[in-house]
Length: 265
Image 1 (cartoon, rainbow, N blue to C red):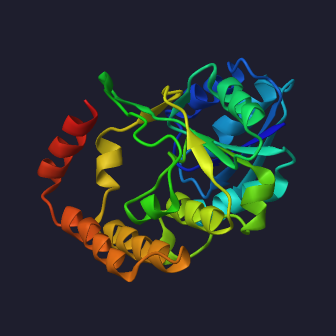
Image 2 (tube, rainbow, N blue to C red):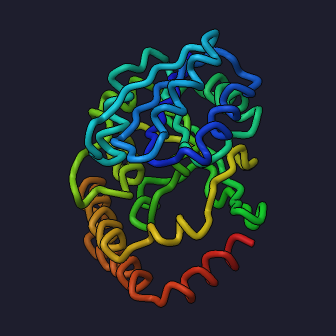
């Protein structure tokens, strides 16, 4: 029923914990497809050992000799996926035990949905420090100008919906915003999704995550915000909202982290 796609890259210290959270799901009708994106540590070997130790589960492992980025990695996982639904999972996060059970139930309640996601709990080496909230149960397409409208890592997507828009788009200007761009394509196709109110996923947001917040990715965010206006046929005056991502990008990192944690605390 569910094909879980996971890109793995230099995540040896956290991979087993992430995989255990899938094994421990109350919903059991799933397969897992992992793609090692050219890791330089022993991530790939850890994944191999885990598969051998859990041979009663359907787990596939593919490998890139060179790093190709998350967009291409997820597309390669999609090619191997056989499920009716596509689930996401990151190799340094944790899915709570009832995540897939509750997401599948939501699709059963409304088969017109193409996406189901939920808020996330944020944690680091010191434990949980923040909790997201559902600010919009049924986002409108105009909300895509302001940012991603469904958390990517804990999402479940109908396979036909993601394949109808040819999966994740590839390009340097779409790095770190692959989910946001995917939602634009899915909503532009006339489909829609829902956000649950209960957090069912724990996202690792630590010092390593802070280092990945670079200005070039803020420029990508501004670019995708403009794409949302264009692709969804929204009023042209909404282009101005893309400037907010550049403004955030020039903030001192210490100030940004303070605001980020205060908002989620």
